[in-house]
Image (cartoon, rainbow, N blue to C red; front, side, top):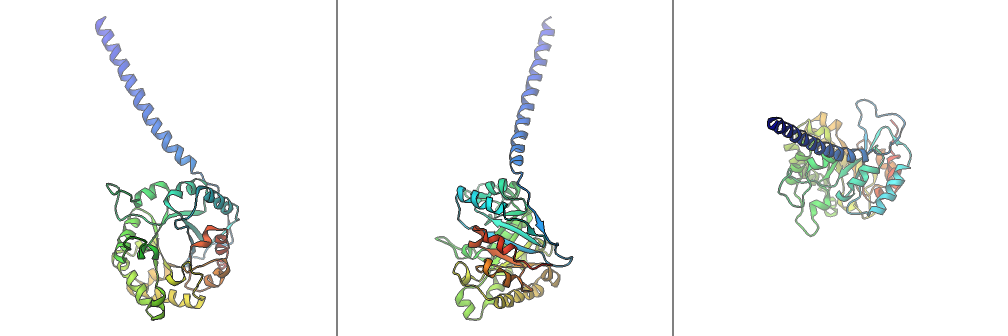
Amino acid sequence: AERKARSFGQTVTIITQFVFVTFILLSTSISIMAFADSCSRPAGASKGSDAAEGTRKYLLGGNWKANGTVASCEKIIAEFNGAGPIPANAEAVIGVPFIHIPICLQSLRSDVEIAAQNCSLTGTGAYTGETCASQLKDMGVTWVILGHSERREGFGMAGEDSELVAKKTKMALSEGLKVMICIGEKKEEREAGTTMDVCAEQLKPCAEILSKEDWANVSIAYEPVWAIGTGLTATPEMAQETHANIRQWVADNVGADVAAAVRIQYGGSMKGANAEGLLAQPDIDGGLIGGASLKLDFFTCINAVPSP
């Protein structure tokens, strides 16, 4: 009887432990699924024809920079969700501050991808204050903006040089993110006629560290620094000349196949009023849009892409 009682007690203990472990596992799964379920974003809609095979699809990126409150995000998300279909030959992405990534992943229409505005050079670990590419990918972010002129210049801190931007780009790509690499000259460099010297120096470390396969997930955002947030904009002809020169540089230093396929966005104060003229240029494949992306004018830019 004593052996039976001991055996029964052991059985109860095992069952109890099994139930407890199962409960913990189920609770963890439910917790994970709860976040995934909460990210069932409203569907988007498209119009028109997709880009023809062998041609580049337009890439319209927005950059909210360090702007927005929860209330303002909810407002612009509601406006974007009701903005109508996106041309099938255009890809739309919004770069939002880290703290607003969750609300966008939960409520912004599913045909607008989410980008971070930076990521670290490191993986996970003892790197206080950093957000690494694998964490962004795990959360559902698909793009990251790297090398923006504001980060290259610095704001009360040391700026990022082109070698660091290239290393961060390689890290982001290795974790499955797509990257918008920003380049561009200052006003005095434009006036001195050194625009392409500057752009080439900024691109060179990327050309050295990235494989041809990496470039399939990279876009180049040409942002003349003198036109960012100033209201000044390069004319479509000026922008086209620089974009064509950048494409030629990529052909010469990476490969003609990469140059033909890589998308080059214009990022110097593009807005609804000038987007059509800029996007009509043969080597301008989209925009990286600042102030206008915080308003419904972002969709005016998106809808300005030429029909295929």
